[in-house]
Length: 402
Image (cartoon, rainbow, N blue to C red; front, side, top):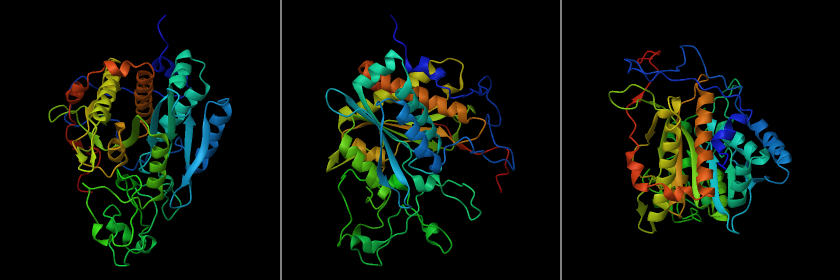
């Protein structure tokens, strides 16, 4: 009998997601939509705010009948709880997988993706889901950057931003008061009237226990190609979870601006993926087996989404080559985890449902492949067959001079 898959089950989640189609027939002189009109803003009423995240997670936990366990693993710089949802424990033959979302506060759809995925894992009666839970330990950090996810302007309107909310406090680390802040605390946020904060996804180090200490003044402000310093409680919480779980595979969900497929094809990229973000450091070499596992998972998702025929999921490209050991992906790869980055295109209300379902299908296929060992049959050398992304583009409905 053919096994029922996550892909088949995703239609029954009660997600209410429509699948608007992008026009792929003929290249256009202006890129395909959906684009916001001038004066139009993204309606975020359908997105989960911080005050609602905990209650939603508690509701899923209550309905799971013991499948899902929920805890507060830490707190943000601004005092918000950082949740950890656990399906099973590593060991006993269970392969551990860690999924993290919204490390950048202004990139919210990953949280919606994993809420749907957790709901499925917690309540589905599907034999496939039960087998996946028997074979995998799956942990979720459903919103790491709670500060950025809840950032509001002076009028109280939600204007989620990339950074957390945290000043530079060199004395906390025993450093000289004149020590410059890490480079990933934007200098414009240090101006009067601004709220300072760090790009949490540059605050990681493959040395998971690293902390600044007196005498480290010369390390700062550092640069993007080097590890970060774990000055944010968000990065320290994520690293503590990683150390506790030691996942075999790690997924991080992000957003990116819009790109065309190629220089000559104006069809939009809906998703960029990546399986390598650092070649390694002398003291932290990249394990080829972990690298290849990341390559296999990226190819698997590329194949899965493209196999769905004439759908918006065909616009998948490879993220640009980078050297970023100070990211969660980079640091965790240098600690032996295979990695996958989801970079979905920027949010517009006309495409949110499609983008959520795209990631949901990809993650579901990945969990199945690990649970049933079909990941081993994916050729990692095909990773570079995934086409690189084309040029970045802006909204053609806005004047570039504005």
